[in-house]
Every structure is written in C-alpha cells, then in structure tokens.
Length: 297
Image (cartoon, rainbow, N blue to C red; front, side, top):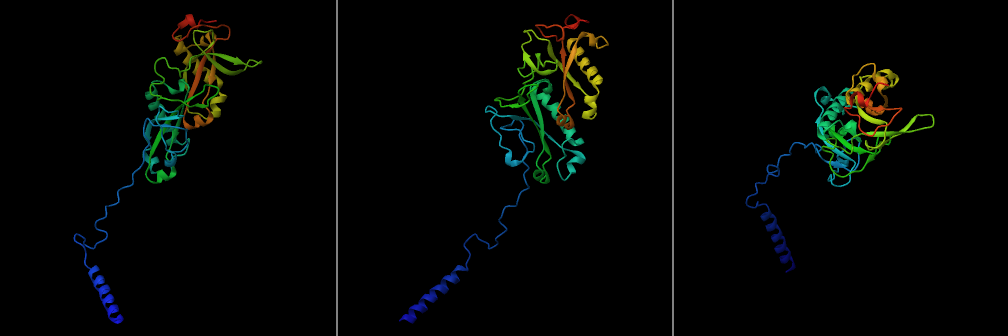
C-alpha cells in the first residue's frame, strides 16, 4: 500500500511537470520582444524664472532644488543660454575667465538687463554665471544659467535674502537703483563707505553711471588712474548734461567703485562712477541739471 501511494504521488508530480510545459494563451515564450525600447537620455535644463535658496558655483543636479519666488531666496535664474561652437565640443565645461566664459557672461549681462529693466550694475544686484557640472556636460548638457540676487550695498556686498521676482526691478523709481549718498570719512579724509540718503536730503555724492573699461588686465586698469578719471568724468557729463571737455574737472570730483578682480576676470568691465561735490551739498538729484547743477568752479 505504501509503495502504491508513492507511485501515485510520483505520477501526479510527473503530470504537473508535463502540464507546466504548456504556455498560457497569449504568451509566445520570447522574453525580450515585448520590452519597450530604452529612450534617449533626457538632459535637465534649468528653468528661467526659478528661484533658489542659495547661490551656487556649479549647476549640480543634486543641488537644483528651486523654490517658489514668493518664498525667501538668495538667487533667481533670469536667463538660460547655451555654449555653442568649438567650445561646445570640449570634454569639460569652459573654465572661469576663458573666452567662452566671457562670451557667455556678456550674453548674461545683456539678457539680464532686458529682464530687470536697466543696467543691473547700476543697483544693488549681483550676477553669477552658473555652468553645468562636468558630469552633466559629459552627458550632453551645454547650458549656462544667469543667476541674479540682491546685495546689501556698495561697501557690504553680502547677498540679501528676498521674496518676489527681480523682473523689472531696475525700471522706474527702483528701490534697488543707486542714488544719492554722503561719504563716511576717516580722519585722513579717505572714504570708509558711501551712506545712501534720499536725494531731497543734504548730500554731496550721486551715482552717475557705468563706465565700460577697455579689455586690459585688472592691474593695468587700477594703475591707470588718468584713464579711469576720463571715463568717469565722461559718464558724469552725460548724466548731468554738461559738455565733456577739459572743464569737467572744475565742475565735479568723482568717486569710483571697481568690479572685484574675480568679476573682472569673468568679464565684468563696468566701473561705477559717482559725482562728488567737495565744497557744497545739494538737496536734489543733479541728473540732467546742466551747468546750473554742475557749474565751473
């Protein structure tokens, strides 16, 4: 009896095994022909208008965590461009200060100015060009993004957390635009900082404009003060609507702020020029004031 039961059990097992060889309806036995084809890799491109909790130097995907611009943030992507030409064939992103980097930076300047409604260098703003990471570059990424943020001021250029977009921030009566100031001086007369005041208050200093310096080394720029003076006096003359001639040095003094060396090497050639009245104060803006505002002394 036990042998018979064993035989029946084995026979049932054999039947199950034989039955398992039959394929269910609709199954053809080919394990690969129904798999979907693997698509092309998708390159993640930053979004224009995205805001970011912090400024970054490189656009790693892991650090790309944009927030709503209504939330507090440090940076906003106002433009996204593309590296093209021979530089796009590089195996790594163009290095900071290279010709391709400076070309991209010039594109950033132009496009950002269009978005903010004026020259970003004429106000409390800072701009950074952010390239993709080397990993993203090797995967085909050729974008660069132009991030802009608000800074505390001329002398303390720390980034200020803000809410809201910077679109149109330099248009009209902008709270970010540089205006009138009074210098804070050391005992020997050197300027410690420019303290902003309302232009209707007594003051002797006013932002006049940007002089775009020539493409020289940073050291060469700083050593040639006569060229800087000519450039800034020309900017002041255009601002006040007075002739740009040899009389300018008798109309006004000037205070100059330079880009940092790092910004200069990245392509920023904008020198900030301020008119300075060393013997009098005024209670209005001297923009367009002509010879009545800047008389020859």
